[in-house]
Length: 163
Image (cartoon, rainbow, N blue to C red; front, side):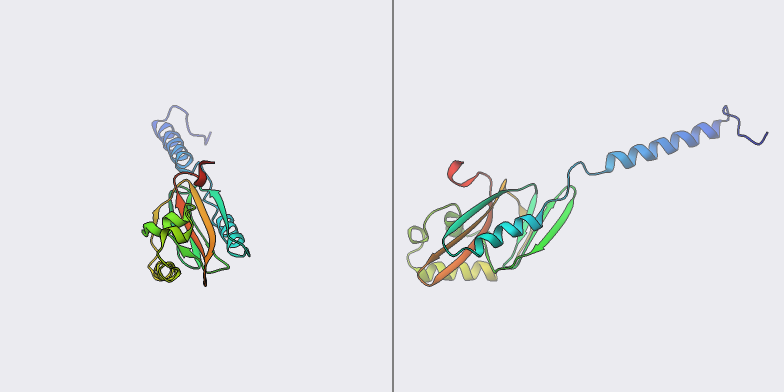
């Protein structure tokens, strides 16, 4: 007696609108999880805490990365995550010499002296952080030369050493 007749045009219009809203919500949900900044920070901290020169490589699921001396941020379609590092690191950005060391070259083959290596690391650490396109891998390399003892952090498109 008080039911809406099923042949009423407004009932069909309401059901159609509700179906479109549900379809829109379902298709807008992210299909991947947000990137794991905490896991990346743990990898970097493990390398920074090492007593000896060492390198760690971690696959990234991010489209952009923001590394400064005390923090790492990762971003993909599902969101942005940040993590604080337990150690001060040297973010490798535009410095081609630091990038060569990050990829595995000994610092003494890239820099003329340990003081030049120290200046480059200090300049990179003091620079402004910014979102950059992320490579496929996050690389953390702890290396020392003379009185310089640093952990370089950056991203690469290919795994260092071709492995």
